[in-house]
Length: 114
Length: 112
Image (cartoon, rainbow over all chains, first blue to last red; front, side):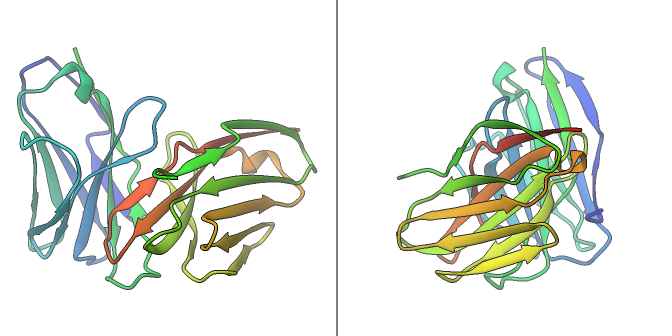
């Protein structure tokens, strides 16, 4: 077990709606990254938060946004959902900034957009 | 190579067979190479983080090597067991960033 949890496990939304996904860690890791895994692909980097500030972003539009809280839990928000947003969303906590530090992943949230 | 590529895409072996997979990545601006093992409905499990050319890491029956000059890493599993069945992902870190660039994975199925 990685100690990283995500909620909900899965959910179904309709096109145009908004969704909030949540991630937390048993350990106080101050860096959290979010990834999207579409069918048949590897996880794609969405963005990273470090001490409540966005610290790097992948090729995702602004309707993908995030928050990190003082207790190091975090949220991924997606507005104006599109069918292509259907995917598994993973969060990963990292204990530090050393190059040998690993990222510990949660089990993911499966989002289906109809 | 501009992306991370893994081969083969899938592999079926018999219990007791040894096997290996390949991860290819850009050799420029290399920072680190991560290997993960991912069972269905579970969290990806970190296996190795490798940073130095020529690195070899071992964890039980699983080992990995790294060649940063030519941009590849091999993952070896000795004496495969059914519980080794999973998707094995590699991820490349480019420069001093925390962004991981993943391959699409190798799906391993070990038949008893």
